[in-house]
Image (tube, rainbow, N blue to C red; front, side, top):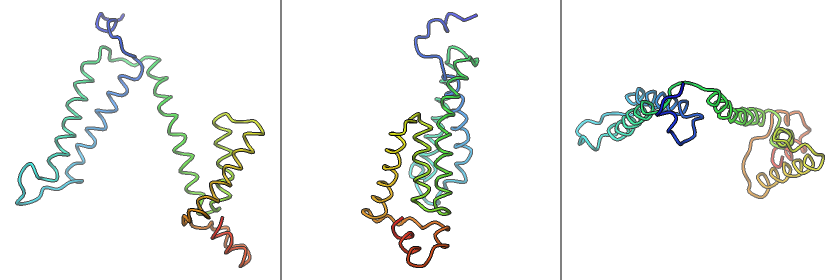
Length: 176
């Protein structure tokens, strides 16, 4: 049964408890690490210490995050909170895509991996028509040509390029 305080709350309920708990947990974690991440300088004024202002900021985060958590009108997880958690966690999928891409570029090369990942990501985002697949491939080639040729970005060649004949290997390493 909802309390009067819960009924009067006008804001969105989903994710409030998750955010408050996550914020306090992260703030406490950062505050526990302050001793190893900053130092206390000898013969330096108190307010000029390298550790002072980060400690003030993190202490404020813990204190105010704890007050926010205490003042929430409800303190139980609901179905909406679980749905919001799934939505927030879905962002991690794209971080995994990026990490796999970064790991494969030195092995297979910039052009082949880009030609694989851009259409895969377009497919994942719902662009599944033949036209959009062609557009994604053209976009992938344009990105590689722009970065490698026009901007001169030095991206290491793929390990598989070592198996190509001499002249072709140099071309692939320099341009693709």
